[in-house]
Length: 435
Ligand code: C2O
Ligand code: CU
Ligand code: CU
Image 1 (cartoon, protein in one colour):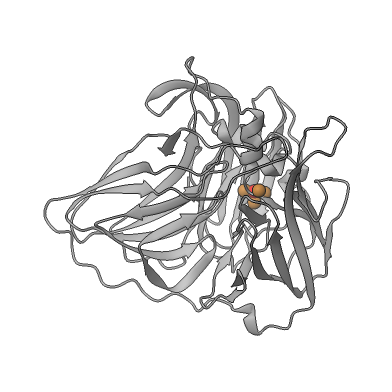
Image 2 (image 1 turned 90 degrees about the vertical axis):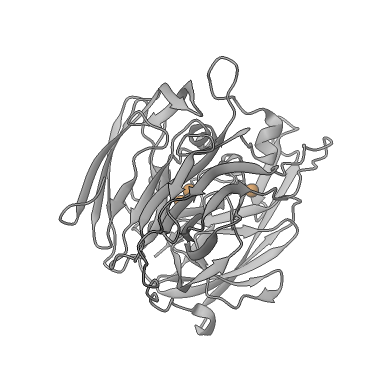
């Protein structure tokens, strides 16, 4: 679905219904009857209007992940609840200088986010390049994971899963297990990859092919960087160029150690994902037409030389206990669980802030900030040389990351949270207010 004359108006109807997933008939949550939902294609300066019809039997809502749009009115969707059976219209106005790239949408109803995303509610948003790149073909690969039970339903999480962050047994690309992709030698494909998994990190490798990375999230590099693998935390996206070489290559996600949750109760199983097959690319036949190199991209903004107007620290912690029920997990930022009625961080308009993200727990936490992307300036005490702008930044177990953020437009109320959606639902989220 692409915008026409500066506008894309779509209806997204959420329902629980029979869909084909992993080659089976499954009862899943879907947008417009499909998993994933339709890809929405817009341009900088466009208006995206979405009419969300909630055909579920529980509250939900819509979030446009990574878009640099005003959080005012119902723009920060996470504060809007769409009751079962209701319809809410959202309107997002992309600024004229909105970065092109890969974004996505998913529900953000606090307490149900992990269940609803795991259930099948996610889809890609592409903000088109102002000048098309020189490629043979483009693919949108929405990667998710799911566990199916014997009766064709999506498995419910158990308590332990919600501490570690649930990971599905099956890895899916656009709802399919190990899809077969084909290309001709020398062709250049552009892969728009979304990590829509609730908790699984993807460490992607494609042996036998040449990969270069154009961008992570909205952070386009000045020139595509040759890479051997690409690591995507939950919520991250990659914009990748693959230059096809004759042969068959398996896109794999390698095991990624994101730590283990060892609470006072004896702890959880290690959530370390095992190696998994994602897709298979077969390159054969007559060589494709020769392509000129991809043009250099605009020089990205760099805040390393900027004057920092405020510094703050966010500390991510996990533990057992607290709460009246006892034995409850707590997932906190600066010692507090999410409260929609509280403002945790107040930011002055037109400032550049530096945030130190510190993780005191034994699990990684990928921090996501709505609306404003973050430039990673330091990781584990080491200065970061390349300019990297992301909206999900992994904060490693017992480690820290330093980011800078330019709050140069938009005021209103929004949030930051861990994008392991089970942790977000447990309260690892704070409210940010800019004015
Ligand atoms: Cu992708 Cu606040 O979420
Ligand atoms: Cu988001
Ligand atoms: Cu987390």
